[in-house]
Length: 179
Ligand SMILES: [Zn+2]
Image 1 (cartoon, rainbow, N blue to C red):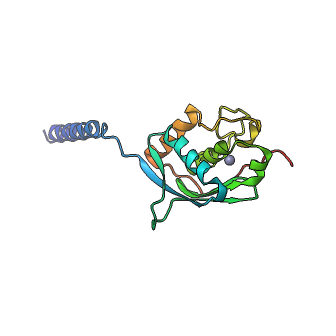
Image 2 (cartoon, protein in one colour):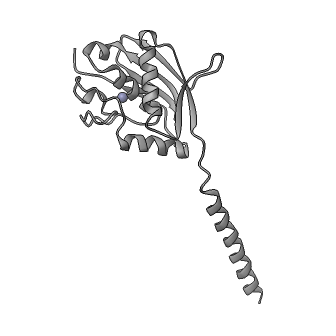
């Protein structure tokens, strides 16, 4: 009799738990907002904004917005004469550089900007050589003007921010063809 009561109680608890899980599921989380600071990107400010807008047009779980005055950005963007590169501290946080070494070799600037933002969104380099991949970076021909992530890359980013994936601190370097 006691066993039967315990079993009945367990069934009730499981039923309540199951009901809660089902009702909680449809509430979609608001997209996470990441603020970037392009004020130190020198002549590349416009293309940095373009890179952010490209991602905003392809993913739903994260938004890249210019940092409001007086606030601390998640992402700082710089420009220098080296290779474009990104240094992440965690998912969505870090810095990246618009490097003139790749710009001067003729790599398409919006593609560089969107690619480096891609690292901040948790994507590693994947040197597939394909222009249709954004994260193929410098392994695609210099003539490649695709600045948009593939559907696989976009869905990986959505998944990263659906769960707040854990991403180790890392540095990624563009490194194009030898000068
Ligand atoms: Zn890269």
